[in-house]
Image (cartoon, rainbow, N blue to C red; front, side, top):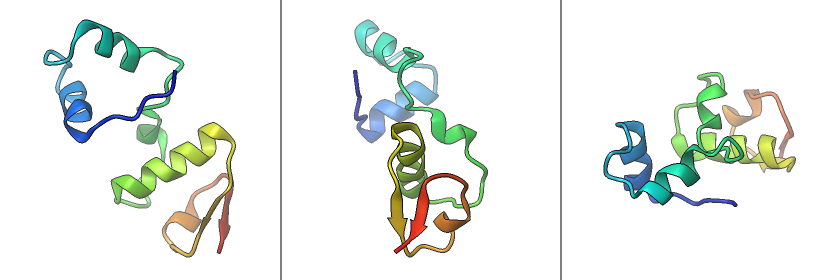
Amino acid sequence: MKLLLDTHVLVWMLVGGRRLSRPAFHLITDPGNHVFETSNLPHIHRDPFDRILITQAIVEGMTLLTADDAILQYPGPILKA
């Protein structure tokens, strides 16, 4: 199952997940999800939304087209637009 998390859900998860329902907690912690894969990226770029795009491109096998020089420093399927 693919999940799209609202910001507060991500924050709740990062502080221990106590505010999440049991089903939500289990969905998020399922090893098949890549919600926390951004933590495996090198810290080249600090924009969290760009880091999510990079992670999605890597995990989903998509090519990310960008003109952002910071994003272009990452390894993976990223090409200059």
